[in-house]
Image: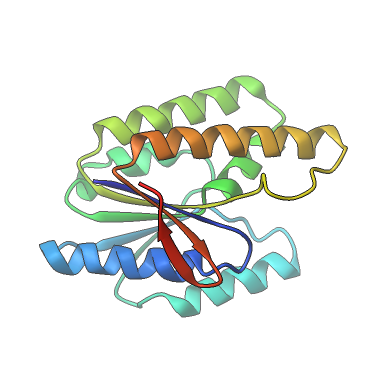
Length: 173
């Protein structure tokens, strides 16, 4: 099963995704792999990362990977686990900042293919970025476009999609 949890900044999507992942793990006696995509490039991001580190159970396995998500999804040791990816839009930021369209397409295509192939239960956390004003610089526009397209693709591939707003999940699919 593939799950998508989408919401705005500080919407409660991460907390909801963590509960969902733990419930899936408990129901089938699986371990949870927390796949962190963020890079601590400044103090503010480091503080956000620390907050997420403190919010998740210590017994969860941690994998930090900012680019090659497919390799984690396809790793033999992860096939019978619940993989929680936090978060898809930070991963997109990492790829866009490479400023290499070939690498971007390679990583994105490999990830989407791995979703089909992996036997792991997958919970993807992503940000809804299309509901606000889009900045006028080209990188911000590209990010908004890519995030919208990725979120649509993930929703299509997921059996369950939930929008979280003010800490409340709303089932979309």
